[in-house]
Length: 253
Image (cartoon, rainbow, N blue to C red; front, top):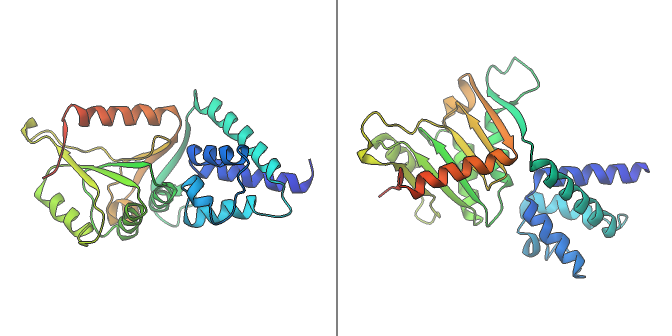
């Protein structure tokens, strides 16, 4: 394999890791139907926008790279990923901790921002948290960007007057598309709290963490979590949707 092909393979691998399979499958289908892929129709075909669309077109629009080669690599990569993901989870440690300690583990805040940025229109983001505050500014801003781009967000939080105040402040703009907010069912008793901290992007990746979506949780405290890609994500999502269907979580007034 030439150096050029190795470079192309590395770029294709990164794209397969970072972008939704459904979007890449739409790209392959367009190729197979004979459609010419341009930077103007890439978003319409795949639903991928912004920086991701730019990265993808830099590869497939490179005149020195044959589209048939990229197509074959993407198809092969998606098939391999699908077979592996069917029976395996990819798990990564994530933490919030002292900046002076370098242990090769990524920090909570940039991981969450990256996860949110990876969502595309048509996907749903599911966030479960005890408390979400506006001082986690960059994360809240990214959630707003997702909503503006047509990504649905479900927020499941503990039922409290403090949370109501925090969420009103987070999403105060009148023109803003709002997330759907769920709370624990009110008649379950005072002992029953929503204390889990989980972020699920579509059904493809999730972060299970001790960190609340607050400045303290994402930047200051000592927090640990696991970023998971694989079949366990679908199991977690099914559990959460079941909790909503059975009205353990109900839509806030």
